[in-house]
Amino acid sequence: MKILRVIVKDIRNFIKERTLLFLVFILSLVIASFSFCIYMASNMHMVNIVNSYRKISNTYFIANKKKENISHDKIHELETWFKQSNIPNITIKIYSEILTEEKESIEENAKENHTYNSTEKRYNIFIGTNNNKSTRRSFVGNVISERDLYEDTSYVMIDYNNVNAKRNPFILNNTINIGGKTYTVRAIDRIDITEMVIKHSNINNYEGDIINETEAYVIPINQFLKNYEIYGIEIKTSDNLENEQILKINNYIKSKFNDYYLYLPQKTEVVELRDVKEQIFIFSILIVLAQVNILALFTYWIDKNWRKYMIYRICGANRKKIYALVTCEAVIISIISTILGSVLYYIFTPALAKFNVTYILKIKDICLINMIIVFFVLMIISIEAIKISCVNPRYIERR
Image (cartoon, rainbow, N blue to C red; front, side, top):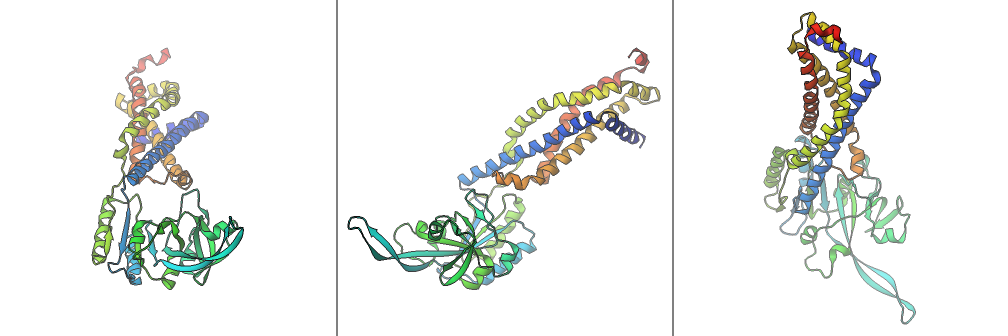
């Protein structure tokens, strides 16, 4: 307890007597921890992109084998199970049948210089979801809110290639009529329809590129369930799930949808720090090079307190205690700094998402990164601590 009181007293004196020096030292370590976290999150985000390119996904798709609608009770069971299992950030999308409608369009014959009416067939599909958050630059408007999920707000998100968006560039927050129902356009984005959705839709034989010909509309899942039947279910899990959680989801979906067409992710991989170990090594070297000059300031502080350490020796402190005193002071300051850097990282995660860095480091990842920084601080400070602890106190008058 005595040595702990001495450490606290020395740190307090460090702050009072060399405030600017202390701030520079602690700020440098905060920035080191913060930048290390961003660097690792960025690299792990790139690993996720590579996995997606290799068709490694975290998306499940479910469809009825008889090309009929799926019971609404299945969605309620899914939502209830995910809530009870405390599995966060689950996105559920449900797809309606493909609705066809014929509309007259006015076309102009350039050669004959006159217009005439023609009939064209259009395809519509509704997508109900509990989450339409997007990091795409094409997204404008508001995402589906809690209010949209529990009240009839007539929310709809349309594709930026939608005919209504092309006709009216100021369509946002205006109303449109789709299939006899009025909706308010609250967002515009690119809406992807996969071949899987078309394959298991109510359309058996179709001509042309129906994926590009189909106009998709995204609405809150509760409004979908009130107005449309389900022909397909898509479940997207978070990128940061543990292997145990992934296995738990797989087992549940298999047990509940064993009579359906069930498409599991081709390969579910949890990205971990060992996947970017080369980047960890490179950045660790950069941390060492960046901290050498900063740690020289702490070494300067130690040197200024040389006489004080010699007095401790005269009063009975042995070499081990002097070494422990110097290194513990540096480690305590380093731990506090890295914790502040980690908190700063989590505060800035929403801002990082705007720059397409969506991977969020786990607590164990943060701890490992901070341990690396603290280890290098300890390694560098230990050299000076050994020197101080080995000096004989009888030379106190010579300095």
